Length: 65
Image 1 (tube, helix red, strand yellow):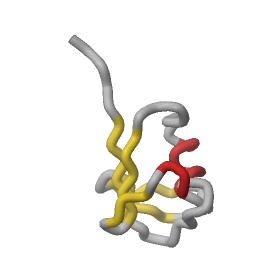
Image 2 (cartoon, rainbow, N blue to C red):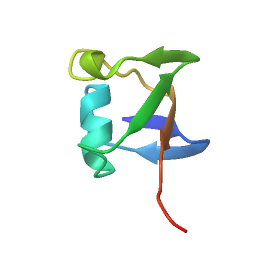
Image 3 (cartoon, helix red, strand yellow):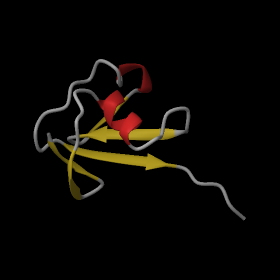
Image 4 (cartoon, rainbow, N blue to C red):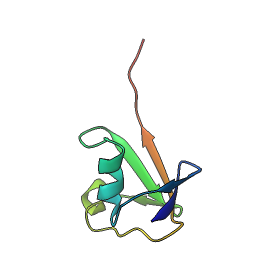
């Protein structure tokens, strides 16, 4: 399915936000997800279905110093 992730078109085999998180290897990391302008709580990721051309923003935190 074609999704817009962080401003880039991505063809992903995903049905839910949880699948998208898995695709990018972000499980267990602090991540904020916005889908079509709405923040999606972590508890909702497995149940929030994605639609073609849905705009998803993934913000994850990277440590460093």
